Length: 289
Image: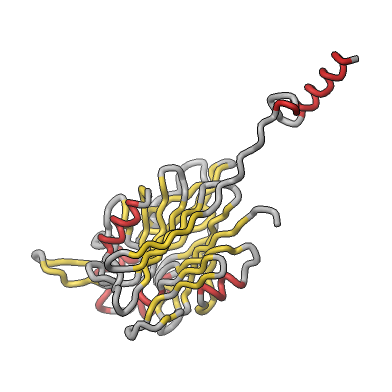
């Protein structure tokens, strides 16, 4: 009878996908959790959120018909635990200047923004503006993976595009501000710098590590700490372990919600400024309540 009982227990363990009898099982490690950190640098206060590459967390995008604050976006989704501002938009007409896609559908199309495409000062840069970099999520078989690439870059074979949030320029592996039409120079002299890339400012960015973790960085600005330039932001997010990184909309659009904390940009007088934005990235916690 003992032999029969042992055989039944082992058969049950194997049917459940276990590799040993129940008495020999070791406890499963807890799932990884997000890590939030605040660093005070000489030039800026920087907020870092590391999102593990684990099924517990889903990084997704959201886009508004008009404009909404990051708080509005967070309150509109029950499982949302963090939100950061996304791509570029024109506050004058509330229309996007960055592509936003979900699957095969374009949710926001900068080529339909007349204030962008009909602007005579931008005609020479439009091919670059309409092919800027984006943060993508793919579904490749059973695996979800993230990437940062240009808008016109094809989706990898055997993968489908879950969503794409346009912004730019890329910060890593190299800064692509001129290649994406943000900056331009003639005979070594800067003739265009649409986002003040070399000046300190509030900034937002998203990066991806070798392990597939996603890193958000939000650079806070104040009357005494003016923020970071794009090269400084690239160096900082690389120090956090990112191998690829994308600059998001910055300045007064920079804003972050983490749990019950709301971190905003600042006005020129150093007052908190929560500016409505067009799009966001958000983190959903899929752990059972």
